[in-house]
Length: 594
Ligand SMILES: Cc1cc2nc3c(=O)[nH]c(=O)nc-3n(C[C@H](O)[C@H](O)[C@H](O)COP(=O)(O)OP(=O)(O)OC[C@H]3O[C@@H](n4cnc5c(N)ncnc54)[C@H](O)[C@@H]3O)c2cc1C
Image (cartoon, rainbow, N blue to C red):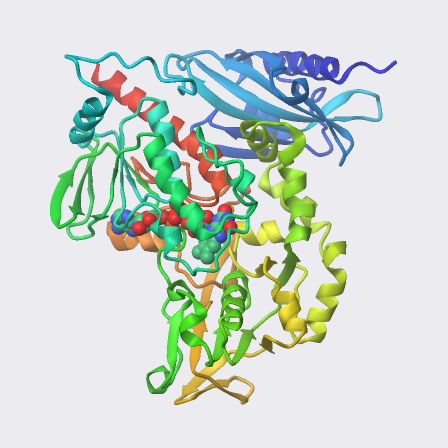
């Protein structure tokens, strides 16, 4: 009779602990193909290591510092689930870290049974959980004991008035990334202030009215505070916007709205005092702040690229960037050209069509990956985020992060081509002139942030039925007073042109590629604020040579300067890890001062 899965995993954890001491890991890892992802356990960075030789070298120093490995029986299914591909076991575990830094940690291992009958690890994830004595407070706040008879509100007012004094962390930007950062820091006891030049929620509310998120609500969970259970599976922009405001209030976050980080004078960092000097404009009042750390959370899409094509000045219609699309109603009866065939371009084309544009044409320079939402759900969301599987979101985050990006890309690239649900649609789209690529959705999300359409609103149907026309394989060469002229010499009469792309260079695993995206990089946006100080730092976003996301939620290359960006899962999972790095830095600084 084969042993229980929990027994198999517990035996492997014992063997792993022993192997860390002996240094011989060959009996616990699948030597043919094995991966280790370490998030802050053995270094203060994110590290992916592939292959038994590299893993052995990396874990060499770990020996007895990592101990007390045990199956996390409090989690879903007692910590172990059966994995289908490859067949095996996925298990969550906990362990402790001894030494200078006493801490707790969590992990996830994928075990595969070998031909010799032994279970060995294919992937191992190690993640720092809590610093002993500074644990994240996830339970109820202690009973409020009034000082001098002060009420809760009076204490809040007092704390609010002194928030800028001895400030540990200034978070710039109150989108989901900035607010999640502030919430994590608060629950870890680190003083943080968020500033935003607009109002909380504006970053969503100011996008086009027809916008619905393309990621499902459960995947977009925030720490400590849930969405109403009755909310839709894909949130419209206004619900996202209102949730951000309620999150700020519910979590008692200190946020200065209508407060802009100024670039003149530029923020400066003093190596001696280990503090920044930054000027912020708070509703016309310039204030100087001296935080120990700055987290830049201004969004990946903060710097729309200028659309620049000959003849634009002569065009008598309207030309604008997709970030300035505030609804198609103003263009009823107009001939609309949308330049760009990805998510924003197709969303905007649909909006124009629904709002009565007389003609809508999408310009598609090169093929786009097409995925319907049911296919996305079947491929990714339901598989990676089993909403009904009963697992808590923190467990799902661990499981999802246990496959290193580089391995994930290998798996996904082995299965290119349309999902079976999309085969007929893809054929019909190509026949209608909208050319599809066989790209990999997740890879495009992690590298180019472009090149795909996740069809939420029937854009494929509209193209196939000819309600939205497609001009494929061309670029706009120039404008005439009432028309767009393409590189193949053809012309299209137009009243309105929406630029939903511009060229950009990007790198993937160190190779320079070309893609089209309507925004400059986040580092370029930060450079406008911080100047040359950030220009030589790591690029933000995209994958580095190891397959870890560059620049965000990990050391930026400049002391006390950090980036928080990306989707909700990043904000929730990696944001927690950035909060831990900030907590560690605060702890180091207080030890130095003592
Ligand atoms: C059209 C569109 C659709 C998207 N759909 C999805 C989706 O379905 N799912 C998903 O996961 N992601 C989606 N994203 C990507 C991403 O999740 C969003 O862009 C999200 O808003 C990013 O959150 P953020 O906190 O990083 O930045 P933002 O929400 O952009 O917030 C940044 C904040 O920084 C402030 N700011 C900027 N400069 C300064 C300054 N100098 N001083 C003070 N404040 C400043 C801004 O006012 C803003 O409020 C989408 C993006 C776009 C553009």
